[in-house]
Image (cartoon, rainbow over all chains, first blue to last red):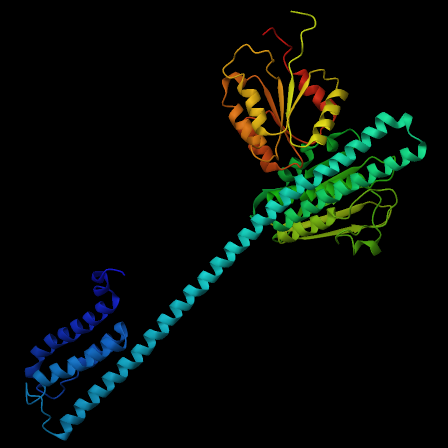
Length: 362
Length: 141
């Protein structure tokens, strides 16, 4: 039970007090004017007082102001002074009009107050709902991250075992195995590798979907350079990647952009004809407030008919002998979409591919 | 220095026996001759390493390298790392984190906590050969 003292000095009390104060103030104003006006317009200053009292306080204070004003007016400004009898119908009418209109004003003010209080309560309720939803989403995100982490480690451990022991058998016991047994082991090894690859990439996709997107200005040259310099496989003599043409700065997310560039480069390096050394060129161009980053390769190309399905999950352009999961480009598409950009490709079979992504210019 | 001085051990802390077997294989393929000590959880590893702090002459040599699995029940690899890096007696030991999947966040934390490196299981034997080649030769206790 909260202490009484704060209640008394709460807002309702203040509102009535204000109404009282206003009426009293008006009375003191009216007094010096009495000789001038006589008793011709006893209520004239009390009307604004009642309106003000109702406006700031609502129905109750407005009503208080009305009746207090009537009382004071009758006492001092209404003949016969100090006596609470109504001398004639005219006076009664004027008093009645004042009381009625004062009450009406108070009532309307009260309704207004109620509306305002209702709106405030509704606002609070909506905010509470939004907060609750945000918390729910954050928890779901955390659960997803925990799930991803758990899958990354716990799911891949037995796959590592399968793969590892298959390799042990192949490498160390090949001599004591019949050829068909060796063949079976090789298939186990291939299947386990593929399973591991699929899991890893699906996890990457889940991560991209779950990433809380925070964008900032990123210089393309640094982003691309970071990916290219980070891995030995790009730096070998057999792979040539030039990115001096990346001049612009975009609005993006560092992790997502890294993933996009990495996946596109991996494809460019992987899908080349045998005996062809991958040569990849990256550059950027600006169109208005959008920057387009081109990744152009000398690979096997993609037929126009297959380009439609290219970015779909687990779909691949038909090509013989190139390993892939069909997830890499789905990741690219989702990551770019998260950064509110676009991705596309221009290509013909046998003539290399020109992938592009568009992001907002920073 | 005796010619047949036993090499100081390499410690691996991992709750997955298959992973330990595979690690052992990688080390063998890398030509690493140090004996491998296996602890299944952080607690056992902690008890083992504690006997070297403060430094005292023990029958067992202090390990030169400790491989810590990141994902373990109970005391995790990171827990062991944090404690070990606070012990001056263990300052000479190289700690390497092993993880089932490469997590950038984990790699950064590993570096911050004083790990010498962070690997996804398992790097090629050549990597292990290089790691062990930087380790000091065995010295008289």
